[in-house]
Image (cartoon, rainbow, N blue to C red):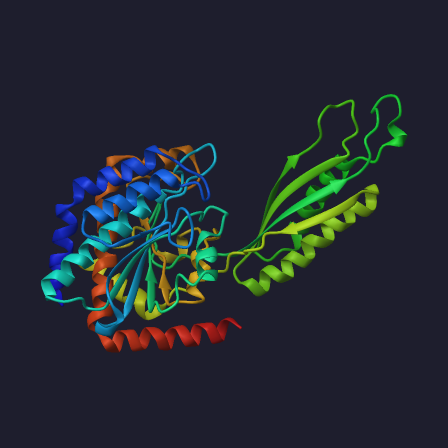
Length: 396
């Protein structure tokens, strides 16, 4: 097993320049939810050129699956790639590096299969679109993409290292208020002001924060506020995210926030429509045994967390959480040579900087090594599945 890990790491190093080019191509062509056509085509061609059979547009126009081996020889391990960007600021969450790490792991595992003289099991490198609010992994779950998979892994860039950061469950909602337009100077009494409803709702949520638990988060914007100052707005819109450590807590918080929205409609005489996102994100369940294997491997590569786990700022959300409720999963975060924060222009620059490369390749190696552990150690897989069963039972 140790020899296979060395072979996997060596293969990743041999492809380092091409992997950097891959990352740069994705970074240079930022694409939004379910519109990642350039990235999809580039990644699938790259994998095909390296000898992977690839199902392009698998289950979705910008998803893909590259498969090696089969279940008759051992477990089915999935390594996930993300490659969507954010509106206006490009790859400010570094999904180009996630794609690179996933492909790198696939190349390392492929080399280990070749050295072993046979597939050690089944490997799927899966391209998952639309993580940034589109719920791409949830769509793929609904379409059966993850059926038969024993473990799923990916790694995400950040301003620091953390193997098991806390991710919140999230429910997204669009709130629409409808009133009645009127001339704001000549006949204001004839109007029903939908902007007043939006402002009242926003302020009511702000007041609610005094009674929120420390880990609860509600944040939003007024996405439509009216057309002109001299027209009383007859329609306004807000977009809010409701987050908490678990789905059960999100449901409680959602009810409290809904009352804030309803009260604003009552106070202003407007009608209200709530449209909750049909695919809410769940919190991430980090599989303990799988995580220990990953941490053991990353340490052999000389990487030790830069800060204590408890100091890492959690609170974000990802559709990998939904995968982790279906398949034993890990979602470590990794430092890329910059203290820039995710979802900023500074992080966009850091994600495209060559300085991020050695950190990203190290993650690809650790994922490949962890997959080799799963392929070659039946006892580990047994423990992973036992942990998963316990975790799911505890979440109910």
